[in-house]
Length: 280
Image (cartoon, rainbow, N blue to C red; front, top):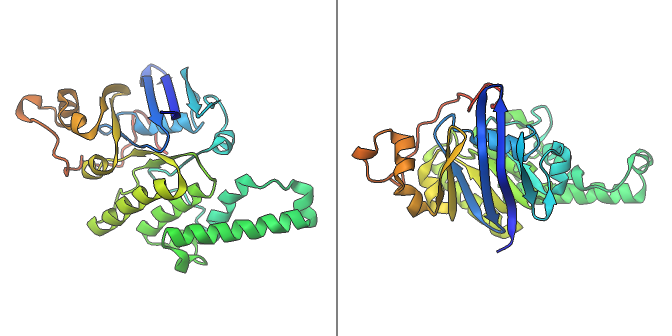
């Protein structure tokens, strides 16, 4: 199967601390893939490497046929990768719809001159962006909040807006960093269904970081587990649940546990992963 995302021996060190070491992943097109590990494992560092926030020391990243490691974040977004953040990063003062329209502007072709003179091409693109933004807000269930300031939204709706904004860039691969963190049971259930539907509706491949093991085991076809920046397991949810190295990394007592219960969530803290530079 063709790869949506292929990572080969990606590494990054902060001074003497190896945050990510020889990380590799082959993510098929259309896959819903999980990236998990204990707090401080290096998961968000991997996302930062993939999206150009950090430049890797070694290794390569291919988005489809395009090599993207070392490129700037805006170049990677144009190539077809978008993300959400562990700590929500919206344009708080802007309206909900303007948050989405801003992201959709990534795909416009009008130059600054056409924008300045409001040429027919620019006006048509603006109209298309607004229509597309409204469609995304409807899919994410927050159209009724379109004119509100983003910072005023309830927490769950802010998460939905972040996803809508990421989708507005028309990604081939969508990176979701703890999309259900801080949500109650009902909100988690709704988000789970939403994530599953996005893949089919938008034809996007999804890479998911999440501490809620029940969610990961339910919706992901394949999972990579890292600990202290090192890959310790790759496999199906069943294989991961029964892997002794994974059990030890999460529980620290492999002799007392046979598997990770599918519905058990690993404890979550707000501490940054790997180093202070890791937080997003």
